[in-house]
Each structure stands twice: as structure tokens, then as C-alpha cells.
Image 1: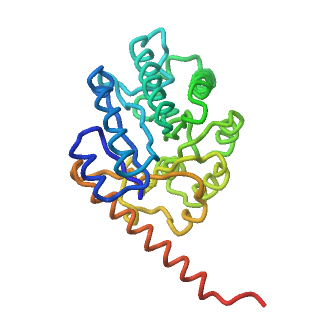
Image 2: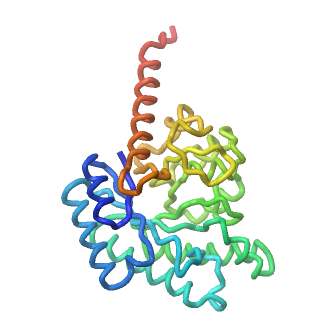
Image 3: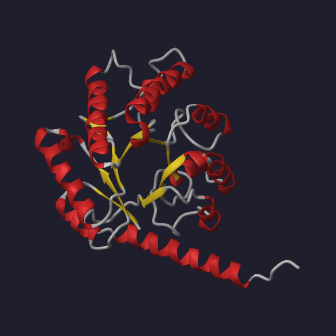
Length: 279
């Protein structure tokens, strides 16, 4: 069971009662003050001692209300650029010290086009982002991974885009809902992307979706074909359920997603057991 929480003690305590085998911290701007970093380090030690050593630190999504987009031109947004790099360095320091992982978004979506429009064209913007990802990959080595979005930059669901990503041999985080939405709700395209990127994926965000908007649904409530997805996951990768919660202090929807997938796995296994052998 892979669960996600912020650095709030009530959230962490709630997740720990389920004895997760993977734990992902969703960090925010406040976690990078001197006091915040001390708290985060304590939380890492807490989870590691009581539950699991498989810990992922999710890079903060926003800085002063703005998305932490690598595509944001550094000359026009120096404070944002510096925050992205400093916080990545902070998380990687923990990752190396505690032998855990740092997750950085290659892109987001909601403001990406705003930044892309500041470049001569999309190709130039993409080159800038990949240059930064190359630098961060060099920094993080085996302790960093990059997650897909639904923006025109760094997404899964298009073979040419995926081939460009694979050329860099990045360690990848695969968000199923992001890919499904980018594929406009096509399970066939999601299947192809899962197979194509499988060997480079080190972590999954297992999330359901209707395939139209960023809805982050409990597994089984959307249109993703999980019976198709399960056999295509890299067994060496970790995973968590990144589901919208009604109450951040209660992992109910994440846990329900795990039970759904566990039951589906049992059913698939049972079906395979009773299938007649080829003669």
C-alpha cells in the first residue's frame, strides 16, 4: 500500500496506522523555511522508523501562488527559478542522506502555456525544459525522478514525445490519470504508453479519471481499465494512490483504491488459475 500525505503530523499519523509500504510526502512552500526543513527531516525519520524506507519527496507545486514550472524563463522569473532549484537541492540532500527519492514535475498544465508563449516557439521552450531536466538528473542520479503532466511539455501518450524522453534515459514517475487525460480518455493509448515506458518507470501515481479533466478519482470510479493496467506496471517500481481526499487527515479514498486494486488482482489471479492449459 502506497500512501501520500503532507508534513502535517495528523496526516502522517493517519497514514501510518495503515502500515504503508511506500510513503510519499507532498511538500509545500512552508516546508522550506529553516524550521520547515527540520520538521520534514523529523517526519522522514518518523516514517522510516515506523513504516517504510521507501519514501518519495514530492517537489512543491507552488511558490507564492505560482506553479513551479521549469519552463518559466529564469530572466523574467528569477525568484521562482531560484526557488525551484534551491528546493530541489534541499530535497536531494535528504534523498542522499536517507537513501530515498525526490520527485520533480517536468511540467504542470494550468499555467504552462502562459510561459510557453514567452518563447519563440514550443520547440525552444521544450529544449529549455529538457536542458534543466538534464541538469537535475545529473544532480540527483539514482535519487531523482520526473513526472508527466497534461501540458504540451513532458507528457506521456504520444510516441514521439516519449521517444524524446527515453533518449535522456530519465528515471520516470508515471501518473496514470495525467496520461489518460492527455490521451483523451483512450485506454488503448494509455496501454501503449505504459508498455513503451515501463523499463524507465520507477514510481507510479495510481489515479482514476474520466479522461477529461484533472479529477483525481478513487480507483474504480473513473474510466481507466485497471484490469488492463495492472499487468503493465513495472514490478520493480513503487507506487502510491494520489487521490483527492474529502478530508486530508483521513486517507479513506486512498485506502479504498488499494482495496479495489487488491481485489482486482485476486480476481485476475483466480481467473488465470482456472483457465484450461493449452494442449
